[in-house]
Image 1 (tube, rainbow, N blue to C red):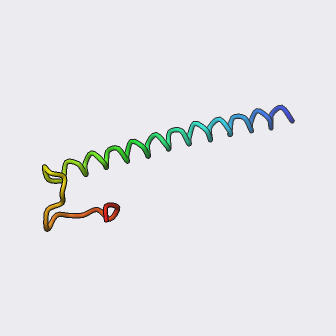
Image 2 (image 1 turned 120 degrees about the vertical axis):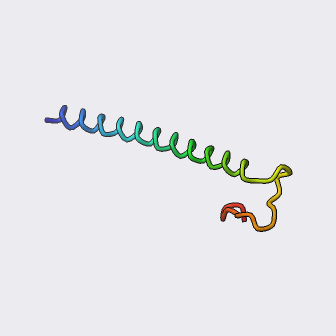
Image 3 (image 1 turned 90 degrees about the vertical axis):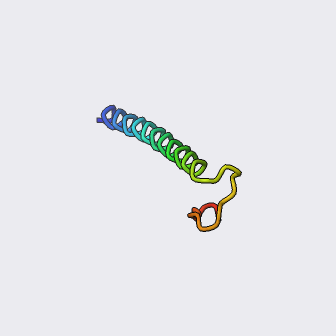
Length: 59
């Protein structure tokens, strides 16, 4: 019985570590995608023109 609980605990720990890895990779990917979209929406000189949408994070 002790071996079963030990193996179960190890499996749960490994799944937790793998899950956090994929979660962080997805969050970083989404952040990079958002930065790319922000760069495309700005003007050529990098300044925000009057009347353009401003993200809350940039304020």
